[in-house]
Length: 393
Image 1 (cartoon, rainbow, N blue to C red):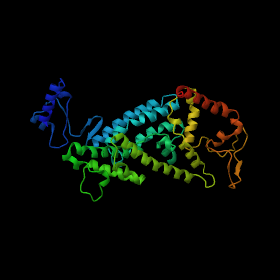
Image 2 (image 1 turned 180 degrees about the vertical axis):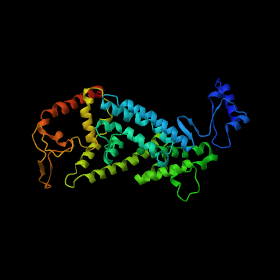
Image 3 (image 1 turned 135 degrees about the vertical axis):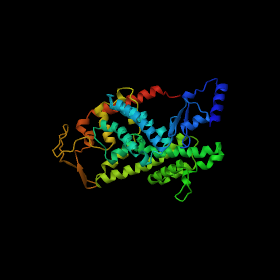
Image 4 (image 1 turned 90 degrees about the horizontal axis):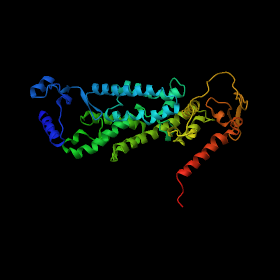
């Protein structure tokens, strides 16, 4: 190891015209037999830093489990500080966009390098991170915490009717498995003598002979993904050339299965004769753009009350407090004890609801507003796009 260091110092000076300083160098010696005193006797510089726990290489922790856990904790602490600063922004729409488009992606590189799905190693950290990240939609919707369905919808992509908050729980296994699979396919071609160090995760079973630790964690991540989507193994059988595309394929596969779970939860909540939540969820799946659009003018900017309302409807949660008092629409004067009948199906449902459906459909309230607040902005937007992209005649 000392000869390798001296050789690198020589090449660094000869080819790169630089000086390799020993006080800025670092020795990671995981073997308990290699102590600081032993390395000094072998000729290592006295001012060189030394550790038997681990080190950081290209932003990734390399070392024992306790070092990785502490490294991950420090990374999460830095992200949580950014989330605290984000809460000071006056615009709910800006908070949501920065959280989903920037802050939520900072954890991805870490999750590619640690087995984040191992509860005994990172369970507490994952719980703390997810709660802090989902505090953004909690704050916007004025909720203390979310039930199972809204929490699931927060982590689903917008194409599946969610909000696009990439939580630790929804990302850790796909990120780690994608990184390991990418290494398992590329490493043997570079170092054939070490090909046994990275066996394919889908071929590791309970009866397999002792496997490397990282391979063991990858097989467990695949098993957890299979419990969500049985077709998860097919996405890594012939991986694409890029790690990013491989992780995207794995995540897309599991997201489709999680979307089916959201549908099942909607049906569990709904009454058989009035599937309101399922209908609203299917409608939300047709809009993957509203919550990712950057506000550039008045037509694309939401006020805080409006943004809180549309996010609450997206998450299928109540926007009106559930009280026993009789309620009445201030526009059409209809009361909460009025029921609307569907004669063809011989069913009825309350005219006033707690989810804002009547407020959207109230003809008295919306009379004249459909043209000024919906039709006219759509026409202006279409005209702007036509001017930006003229037809080629």
